[in-house]
View 1 (cartoon, one colour):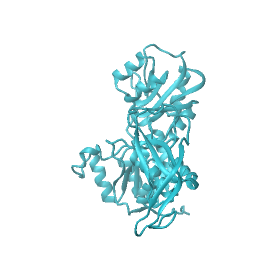
View 2 (cartoon, rainbow, N blue to C red; view 1 turned 90 degrees about the vertical axis):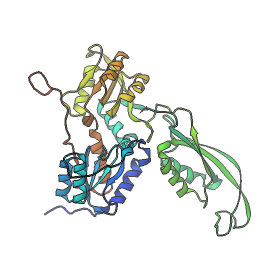
View 3 (cartoon, rainbow, N blue to C red; view 1 turned 30 degrees about the vertical axis):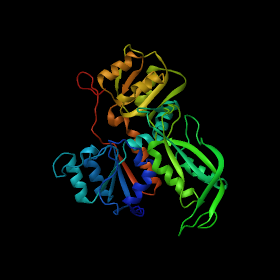
Length: 390
């Protein structure tokens, strides 16, 4: 007997759930994420997960009757240029045209996923036997925001818990960090108001707590939504301040930084690290840049970031890492890193993002959707002389 299909859900509801896991607001300003193609009102019982929009992904969605494909790399990009035209040609816009014609929606979760999907650094760290220590930070200026809110003393705990649960309050390896001081609040409700304390038209004075915490800038909409939902007042008095202090590079903070750096409990042979990398990412080989062959070198700290990792080489060096694992870097960047004592392992861009597939598939299945992940992307491989794959 054929397997019973799960109930259909609107594309809007699915995207909303994914946004709660990897808030769209945390994406870089140049990125283009969220629902890119299709109608939010369409319904689907499942989704295809793919790193890129491909003909294979479209065919799989059509065969299974799914009306959603969730990709990592945006198919309409860059955001600043908009869409000049979508036609039935053989390029990427041709695939977008086909998706529209077939009634299949496309959503992208790119830099917001990389910043927020904590499952990825945990999977890589566990697979290599590393203990996670922190994120790799690129731009640190203005990365944090301070929230100050005024709460009736008796309701501080539910407000505080809701804001922490939304992702605020993490400083380095410490979480649920905040500070409160007591004072007197006053207010008078105008016509049509329904004050939580006292009566409309009366000047009320009450004991309040000014409570403060911090959060990554991209988490603002999520944190404020949690604040408003938990706060008892009709009108919530709060302030937001930019934080000039640079965030700590330790601690796996959701919405802040990329990848991770970590340490082995005991130094490990470089040759063994290479074997573990190939096994974890299911590779026959990778590109290695180092000044001196280091098969017998002892490795203590390792950094990892998926995709193109040029801008994180300095962060890996500052953390004292011996090895930096990524998808790809420019030649001169890799050489300069090696000169500074950080060996660079390049897995291939798509190969480095394999944990996007398993993580996004799990997120969709948690939502009671069918999901299939496709790894059939274009491959970059290294060959031995004579054409044998390395």
